[in-house]
Length: 289
Image (cartoon, rainbow, N blue to C red; front, side, top):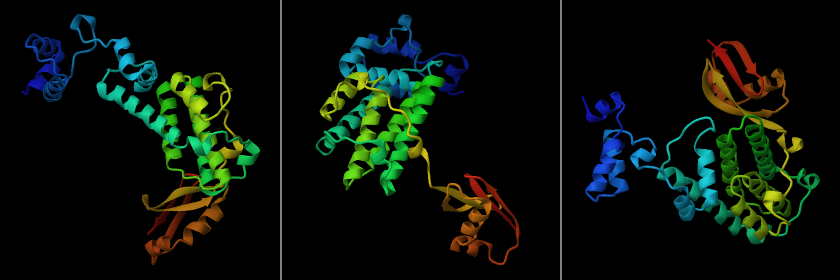
């Protein structure tokens, strides 16, 4: 039996003994302990008796209060335990640095820009898609935070929104205003978790007051509507291609679009279509023989 399996079977963690041994030998090397844990078993559960607790003040001084708060809320649902890891706290720190660098890089473009929902409703193309991402994030965030208290998934939506905004390169005035709406919204959503960073960036963008005391964003029903959606096309249960259809298309319209696709035509050539199955807004499945 391997040492790792032996320890796990008896519910013994390597950190129970090895941590003290390394300290006694004056080998306080976190990387060495991690390598041993990877080879032979999990680290000890956090406990004062095992001298492996994390000092919150030390973490705050090293990474900042916003990072610590973000990591604790993002690491796991509030009703579950989680194991504190250096990788986790460093990941939260990297995310906030990415947010800071992104907003600062766009500051001159966005500073002082104002907008209205009526104005932004005229956005088209990629800008319109970004508005859908912005308000989907708001809708999901509010649902997770207020109804389910799932802080970790709410924060994940903010992280995804940042990724979407980073990929957006505005060229026109309306597109720059859409990006400003996105950045403002992102800061407002994150402000309850990371108030110091968000207030600082909010001010640097030329916004009035503080992010933490500003009205919280509400989803725009118009922005949440999608005129077109992409769905997979299956043949005998296996996905073969994808098609874009009007979001409100009925089955006849969807069938017309699918059957006009060259790839679909080539795949079913010479075969009998037994059934055309359309699950509204989800998928198409052609049963052929």
